[in-house]
Image 1 (spheres, protein in one colour):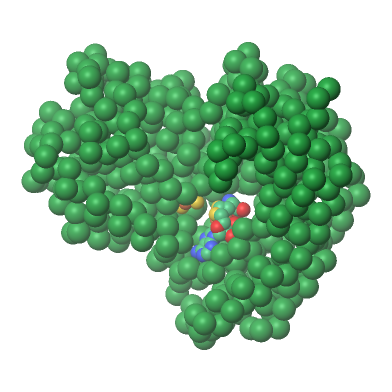
Image 2: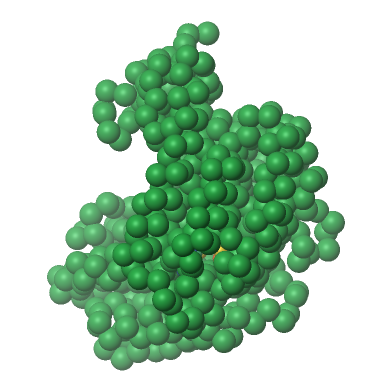
Length: 479
Ligand code: SAH
Ligand code: SF4
Ligand code: F3S
């Protein structure tokens, strides 16, 4: 099979941040009618890896596929379109994708017209894209994070021609509106407010795979929130690699605090947001979070390390002292605040003392939850060029030690729920015990309890009787 290249990714171009004018466009499919004929009685299968940005992209792709008639299936063997939406943030995320494509490629034999597409952050890296091409001749479509809106036209081209198509442009990015969405959940929704990232932390691939920071227009965000409110959504989560940077690239005069406040006034019962970077978290944002009951008192504030030297080498743009002061201000102004974080252990040449500074920071902040990672070099990032003198076994020991430190406080926090009653948004039947329901408190604690399936999607009161490190056990309280 020949390969047609529309655009090939380029990490140097992906670094470019010179142009500040974002282009705003409405989505458009050229071959919509033809695709309705092609999709008739056909199925699609999508598997997504990675963060909420990818999950939200999947919802857009599903919306597009379903708009022409494709039906979603969970079994790839009966799919006519298979899409693997990949993540590149750490090596283990990429390894899983190689394994999955290896399993799926056999379906090309039984269905010559199969569209087997790989998209997401992995294919934005030229060297990885080359490995995929060399390994998997069965894949006939590669498209990037900036081509999601063109999905139907790309499928049309692959379907009606006998070549493999690569369309991955390393551009700074546009904002595309009026895209359909088939949401994963009928009462909880993600709402993008800002795409891309300009921070360029030295270990991170995301700014290369997702383009420059570009905010959606305030009115477009609010239109989406209004629609969700009308459809009776109970919870929305504002998304961005760095939500606090919202509005800086526009001259509309709105910032992230304004987004929160306007949405809070619309009366959606629960408003969350992720991720906030400690560098541009303003006092105004803290005050708005404190002011409205329907803005959840949960802040995900990635610290990455407790050592000033490591933070400097990571390019994080704040010090340990700045971070701790911010936490102090948040805890003072937002009663009942639940703080979570991301931490990387084993950054190149991290010393035992520097690691201990991370432990002491964790003990001081007392996080209610945390995501911990062992540093994974990402080709093309500055940190990947540093010669590292820390062995993997040291990194893995530090990782375990860090988790132990975090769990002391997480357990203490979970214990403090016992005997009290909390509002829980019921998610569904518990994954571990089908006789139980599960849901989340306002502070984002997972709760299991007995109840009727009709309660799914509702906010109920649950009294907590028992606590485990990562979940709580309770009983329904009748009003
Ligand atoms: N934009 C978000 C996070 C995006 S990636 C933020 O800045 O908070 C999610 C997390 O993955 C990061 O917070 C970091 O802890 C981790 N991460 C990113 N690159 C990594 C790498 N090369 N190795 C290990 N962990 C990494
Ligand atoms: Fe990556 Fe840093 Fe941007 Fe987060 S802020 S996505 S860690 S570069
Ligand atoms: Fe992964 Fe891309 Fe998200 S690298 S974490 S899917 S932005």
